[in-house]
Image (cartoon, rainbow, N blue to C red; front, side, top):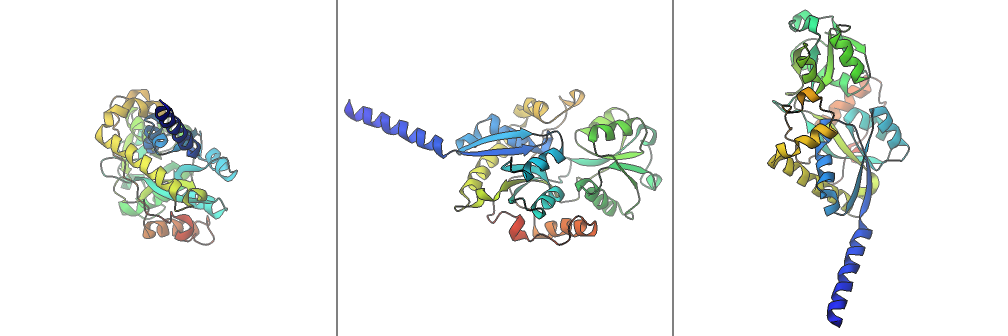
Length: 308
């Protein structure tokens, strides 16, 4: 009996110790489909499995998320490379942990939607016509890259600043702008409501969004980072193995419009990897040209020192 009591006490002590070692991560996200693996990781207890107390903090806008990150209220965040470099350049102590989404054929994440009045126009017809987007952001970077890929000169479209996505979609559908750069699922919704599709970014072969973590998770042999990566990998694998299982979660957390809930695809998310040096240089070169950066941020400052 005494041995049994000792064994139970040891087990209880081990459980308490394990719980005490759980690291807290407050992670800022937007309600978009790129973040579904994080939602799976929380719902299925995968972060907890690897000793992480993960709290996903949802923001209505990238500006609110960035402000919270600058104020030290978050331990990590989901965002694009342009926003990430702006934060790192402003002294926020964080690193790129992994690429959350890369352009992938047959799974467009961004595209140029046409208004109902322009839905039958082709690329040549759209020269000089208005394109709604948010300037000095990854949206403008994408627009420039798409013009390059489409074989037209930069400035083919007349760019109009419309920061808020719901307003951008509304102005498109009421023919106040000729076209708009939209993310999915708003791109599909625009088509469903009578708009057209000019082009998507799916074949650009570039990282679009990333997950970042505070510098502290890369200390002590990057143990915190390793735990995070292990949980995230399992989440991505579960999505790959059984995508339809997570359709209700996607509909609930990723702002899928009701008309699209039953048919919008559950995307095949990439396993954790880092953007290449060439890809990072390309983004930063564009940012310097636009005056968003004075000098480029070294990779050893911005990137995880450990390959996921």
